[in-house]
Length: 127
Image (cartoon, rainbow, N blue to C red):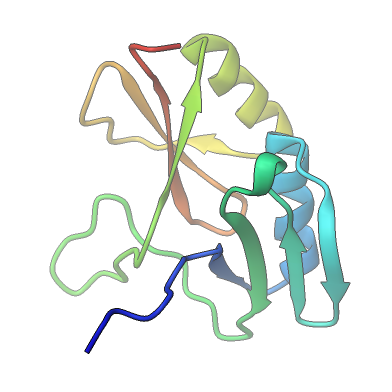
C-alpha cells in the first residue's frame, strides 16, 4: 500500500478556558485567530505553518516540570525560535508566562504558560 497524503496542520493544547489561553499565545506570537467557538479556538500560523488550537478540558491538570514518578507529565511542548533570548523571555513574562525553576540548558529557556504547559524559547544558530 502506498502512503496516503498525511500532513500535520496543527497542535492542540487543552485548557480550562481555551479563549484565555488562546489570548496568551496570540499576544506572545502575534498570530491571528482563525476560529473562535465555545470550547475551541484556533490561531493561524503565518505562511501556512502548523497552527495552534485550544480545546476545553474542564478537568485540566497542569503538568509538572520536570516530572517525577507519579506527577502529571507533559504530553507535548512547543519549541519557539527567537533571535534574542533575553528579550523573548521578558516578552513572554510580560504576556503572562513564568520562567520554569528547572533549566536544563544555558541556551534554551523553559517557560510555563498561564495554565501550566511548558514551552521552550531557543536561539537558532541560523537566526
